[in-house]
Amino acid sequence: VNSCTAAMHLVLEAIGLQAGNEVITTPYTFAATAEVVRYFDATPVLIDVEPTFLNMDVSLLEAAITPRTKAIMPIHIAGMAADLDPIFAIAERHGLAVIEDAAHAFPATYHGRSIGNAPLRHTIQHAVCFSFYATKTITTGEGGMICTDDDEIADRCRIMALHGISKDAWKRYTAEGSWYYEIIAPGYKYNLTDIASGIGLAQLAKAQTMHERRRAIAHRFNAAFAMSDALLCPSDSDAHQHAWHLYMLRLNLDRLRIDRGQFIELLKAANIGTSVHFIPLHLHPYYREKYGYAPTDFPVAFGEYQREISLPIYSKMTDEDVEDVITAVLEIVDEQHR
Image (cartoon, rainbow, N blue to C red):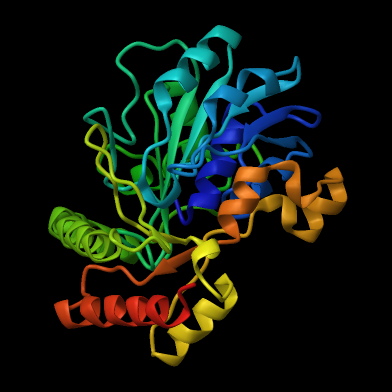
């Protein structure tokens, strides 16, 4: 499909999300995760994240379930897998769908299983949605993908992704195909272009090499920053393979004389571009006003957001680029340490 947003929208439609339903997710994500829930006039129910990986705090999940809950949408932030086993166990217990926002997660693994694969045994509706946007670990320029082992979800997504046509459009042009088709639902124009698909296949062929380079950069950053009491490196895990879509460095502001915004400006002056991932959903005007959120309603998400900086990480970074980033960060820490 043509984006991860489209992928999530299609899957929610396929599971029958309706107005008044609820979908549980976290505030620590890009707007698309909750936006697609609002497309159906359903409610995104937010629960806080755990402080290590900034993924869904599963200990809060069951208490958020109501008779209106339809699905759980965990997010694999930065490329580190959310804790899926307990999420699936809770979903099974309550008969809920699990839709993974895996926009950051290619080619992450969870207990050796690639994100995109379902647990070996489950009875719930399940799908995984990936992004191939320009900044992702592999790209089609703009694009996305749905992985599911549910034939009904897959069939419905295929139909709705291309105008509600009753069969895959490309089959009409094969030897066994027919010119005749029917519109069986008011679908969308969500298909991925042929050119973008070709780019994706070329990217896929070198995905492992690109991931190994990202991992090497992340480990070099961690080695350089680990000794500073003003910096908290993103955690890796022996049990799971991190995709390293993002390198999310967190500042110990108690050990610095400047705030996060000033740190970013000093990096900018050193010619190091950075970003922040993410402004939590409950701080944005729409969600704040729609649901009456206060900043401290999700204290972990709010607190970690205030000290997070995403440093450059991409497979074409040279060793010199990496060392330039390290030097700039450590010089600022030395100059601004308290």
